[in-house]
Length: 415
Ligand code: EZ4
Ligand code: CO
Image (cartoon, rainbow, N blue to C red):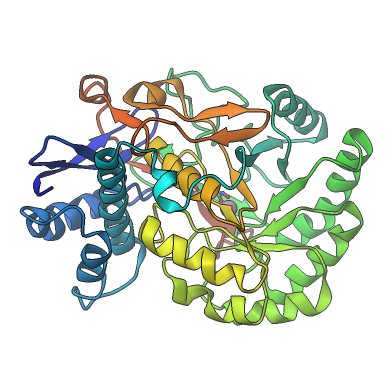
């Protein structure tokens, strides 16, 4: 099973996606997701210039060796661009091996450990009535766990709130309240204003209102997008304790994970982190001191299925579970990969699920199904995703960026 072609495919059905397609001499095709939101073309160049030439002629069965060769062999390790590129190769090789075996990929990872992967959806609103509508809409769609994000009085659009002025139009060109695209197409990022004190004052009341409206059982989550200092994070975690969150995500910036010790000292609200981490080493201190409860790394940004499986096994030693990143910028290929892993591992927690646009689903024909609030991987051999070149060619790349966040005095802030 020799690799005879490696194509880097770019398509933009509502948002930009980068996909690696490997073809072998026996005519098998494997796909991997290399999408890095707002930095897509850097990964295209990394793959095209430095990885594709090394893949041609290699034995596609040698997944571990290829991973080590690309990671350790490059000397320049880690980082989102490098790791998204390696992820795509690793995922495509697993897809190929499973197709060659005639089995859905999860069978090669130990087989099914559960009926499906419980998901959470993104409810949001500028104010409480809009938020409640969004929660109801998600419950009607079948979601059984919900992330809550809202506007903050006195601030304009807030990242993660679908009704914000910055919410991009869906693939059909229509901006719907529930069809949110986190990266807006424009030559430069949109800028948003942020006030942490206003946010900390506002959030407990939001969760109290949601609990009063929807009852005590519904699992609720919240994402703080790295915006807080350790003591602010501790305060938020403590103030939300009465509302029994499933998790509080990314409370502090990713660079200094040791500060979560301080947060942990003050609150029993469960913590999730890792959507911008790239390697197992990023988690070492957090796992060994049990400073987190859920691992956010997706296949697409953590170097693929091979290292993410290792991260989850390491996490399991410390009773830490998976909580994989699943926004629309993880392509259907990346999502399918996460689900094959999620259905197999012993310590699955929850899977984030933002529905892709209809146009995206036309480019990537995925066998993944959404049943009773759970995502279930396809029973087709491999990942169970096919890439339609004809449809893909209708959607050309257009620059799109995540917003930049500034404090009210103009200083750049984390978001
Ligand atoms: O900001 O996917 O939990 N989900 C998130 C996402 C991320 C974007 C970044 O590309 O935080 O909305
Ligand atoms: Co997040």
